[in-house]
Image (cartoon, rainbow, N blue to C red; front, side):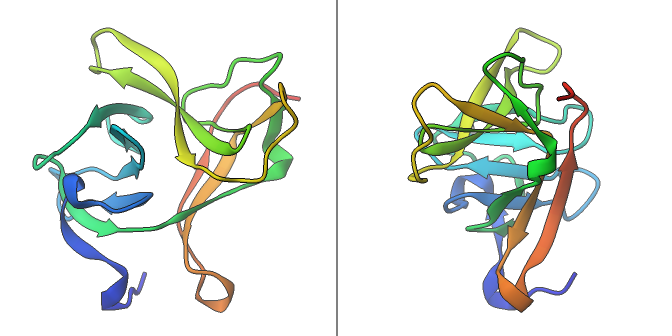
Length: 160
C-alpha cells in the first residue's frame, strides 16, 4: 500500500493523535489501534492477544508507523442487537453519540474485563436506550478516490 509522506509518522503510541493505527515495522511490533480519550487505550488487532488492550497516559514502549486520524466504517449487514445479546471482543457498538469497540482490558493471561472503549464521539444521537453492534468493520484513511482500507475486521459472534 502506498502512502503520501504526510499521511504517517514513525514513533511511539504516546505520540499518536486522534484515532490512530500503528503498524509494525518488524516481528517485534504489532498492529495497534489507539483510541482517543482520557486515558487513551491501545488495542491489539492481531498477534497472540487480538482485541486485548491497555490504557495509558504516556507510552514510549510500543512503536511503529503511526497513521493518525483514521476512520471506522461498519458493514450494516453484520448488525446485531446489543440490547439482547453480548457484544463479543472486537465487535464495534453504535450507541448514544459514539462508536465503541468491545475490548478485553487487563493483562493477557491474567485478570481482564471486557469493556466498551469509545473510538468515535460526537455522532448524531441514537434514540435513548438503543444500540447496535457490528461484526464486520474496517479502518480506513482518506475518502473518495483516495480512500484506502487499512484493515478489515470480521468477528465471529451472535447471529441475527
